[in-house]
Image (cartoon, rainbow, N blue to C red; front, side, top):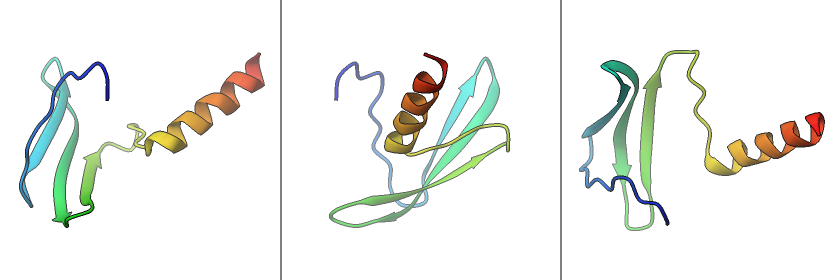
Length: 68
């Protein structure tokens, strides 16, 4: 990982709030932990798009090809 802005340690059921200028964008909750993965729950307005990175990148490539 490069350009690390913030790394947090959270326990099960603990949350992180993403906000901009006091407006809450998304709340992320650690829902489950195991030795190989953690499961996260996201709460956000319907207008906020939340994707896994690979889905986001695939969509961005598709849009780039569409317009260029």
